[in-house]
Length: 239
Image 1: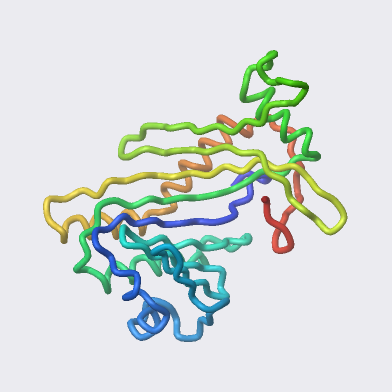
Image 2: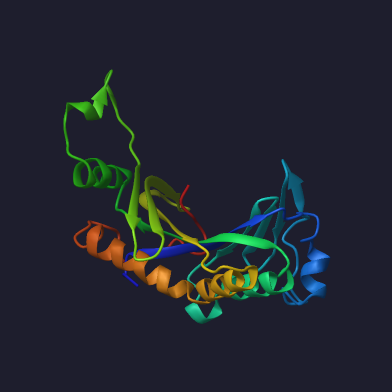
């Protein structure tokens, strides 16, 4: 991984048909062995606007809605072998094999710290965008974010680039947040074939992340004036 690129979280999002959020509750997750029995809830589950949110003290959250489920893990500099989200996703799909699955998203999120908010602003507005009078109106500077889409051999990588700030105990520094979404329609002519493809895609999540990292390092971070050797973990995150 690039010395300056910090992986913040990994989410796996599955699009499914007619998934009942009430089925995927903490008791179900533990009794079926989807999550380890020693895991504890970070807070009580919340059901709001048709979405069930289950957060564990390990940094993993499960969000269930009628059209699918998303597993999100806060990585906080975890070694790759300690990342649990793909294993949890595999077990969930295995236990809910009767569901009709349609597509899967592998969504890494990372950021780069800068020496100041001004440096982060200049990264987007001077390096990624062409400077010009359009960047100011009414005496105010424009705020900008980028939405890019890269067709791949299979699926599409959607990349969002946004400016953020990180609050430390003694200072505030600028950051650029990179959010990736690998959108993979499931292959196969039968439900069992699509589940097999889903499980294979989830198991190979590192392939998607390697593409994400390669794109950022080669195209966006090769000569960036960032703050090296400074980590926000575990005390601060970009906002």
